[in-house]
Length: 206
Image (cartoon, rainbow, N blue to C red; front, top):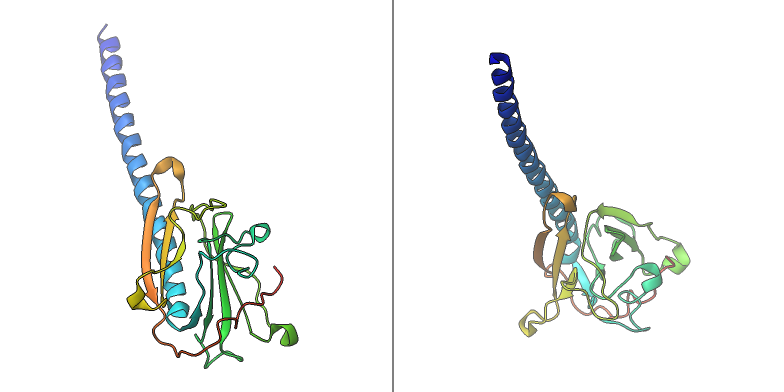
């Protein structure tokens, strides 16, 4: 009888201990996933920050239609508000030629980047798509823009169309927590004006 009582008490203690331990583990996993989400989004925005700040031409990510292939090309996963195209002089000192067209897109939960020269049709300088961040859960909503869009031109007239609002929803593990929202406003202020708006309008094949 005494042995049965001891075993019963021990069983209760083990159940309580196991429940507490499982709760602690879930909390640790949620915090780890949230930290990873923040790191993913912040690193992506930091990389974009350098190129947008040196951007000479910032194309409106919300524009659609055949004359704006940088934001409306569903077969190649280019959707309004989910892709961004700029002409930038970042690393112009170390790259030859330095000024490049840079394009980002969110495809299959991945933020991807590529760049090319304005003379790519003759010099063939076009990079492949490179992974910048994953687990981006912003979703396109054709034919209307996504909510929230990953990329948007700040409508404030005082900013002169020189500020891109970047909003990423990130979630490494949907089972362990909600999306993390990271937002930043980046202005192309370290630039010169006067570049033609069609400088990057001819895109290389995907």
